[in-house]
Length: 242
Image (cartoon, rainbow, N blue to C red; front, side, top):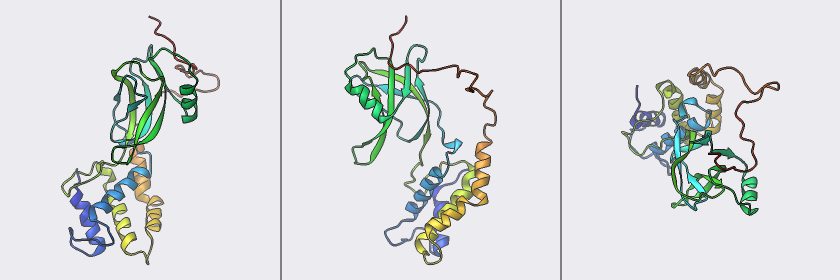
């Protein structure tokens, strides 16, 4: 079962006692309230349904970073696509800067990375994967990441709300809470209304349903008496043994 933006907009109008499509006032729009609700929904929990399939990242010669998918929100897993001889290790911004400025020459193919926010062409911050060493050549899909996407912004009343059906009730409750919070602040602020949702049964039920998507993850590994199996703890990249 799908939902389109106009259904959520109807809930905004119902809360405000107005006809859908009318001006909300105070510089607000109905679609803006719906998008704000979606952003809050995606940020309130690390939802499994937001995790996207593996995506390949391209390396560009002499470019110090790899471009992340446009809907990127959070890094979940990462590796070099050919991880038998290449590697990707995530590190801190400080260590990445230190390696960039120490003048050590290395063989490309193994990288250290850190997610940073750079200013986009429109001035809005955009996440990217900064790398060291700087790629010496271009390579399509050299790195592979799994990531959690962000809210898919709605721009039209007929746009599909890209959430699973079991999230509809929680989402609409958030829509109504934000609309009422803006327009009926004397009764309860937006923060108070959203806090009630976070502490309520709809959020708890949605988390249980989301977590139940995959209940088994194999045997527990990484204990004190057991090595983790695959370790990339080398300090610097090495050349291809072939």
